[in-house]
Image 1 (tube, rainbow, N blue to C red):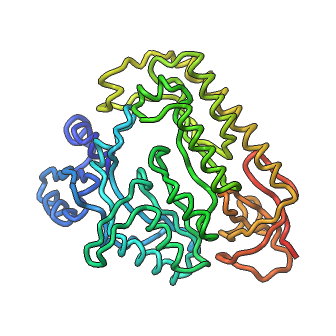
Image 2: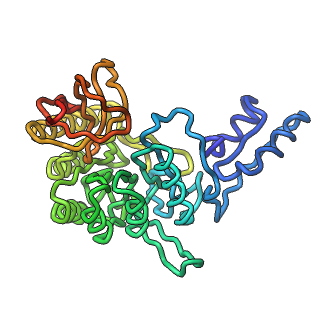
Image 3: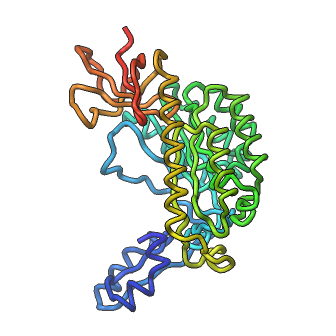
Length: 366
């Protein structure tokens, strides 16, 4: 099931004959009929992409949840057509979910004891829903506010943002509501304007850095993370150094970092040669990871001595004597339980006393 099944349907059904049913990302409603068809010995396939499917009336059962944090899908598909990305071809064009159904799901989660929701979409900032019943146009900034107003005890996060779409309205909304987390995932992919154009990212290095400046101006304490690709087609050493320069300037708290891996059916696969040798890709990625590790350590050290409001998510991985939670900047905080009576889902104040590259260590604030 899903977008990978849609892309590899011929391989699964015909070449390797591994499966009886292939279901694309928009075909879940046809599952009963497909199962019935497969029961007769036929191969059952539905990989048609929908122009309007948003899963708006589905209330998922969260089997592996910690009962505190939950993900809520607000849109499907993508219109950006980044040349390295297969999503527009496997998940279809962008369509936004009914804002009322999103708020209803978030409220139901809060009523069940959840204390944090992450609004999910391939590009959440381009969310746009025309609510004809209430005669209202709901932008992403308005949606954020609707969810934040459910309760001050409900934290709100979102992912992922495209730099070109994160507006001042969104930034002002984050700054206005304390329960909207001060954390933005702002993928850069490359620091080279030339490479960004080949990627079809629609912004330049200078424009991206100005967006980082704007985030810092309107939300001075905002945490920022990123995605970085090493070794995209034709990338030179100078291009690579520009990526390191952007990372250094932006001072990301963390990043998701990858070597470029060609995806069949993408614009890049059709237009460009994957011409950077694997050893050069790996060396550049090592340098990117090394810089990010240093930036993450520096960011965490700056938090030593500060006190944060932390949402307890559960026991620490290393010891049941310690709690683990995250602060508004999406940083993991580990602290001793002591003799306190706190439980999962509680907010506590924690003063940071030490840090590692990935974690803040602290004590309950008395």
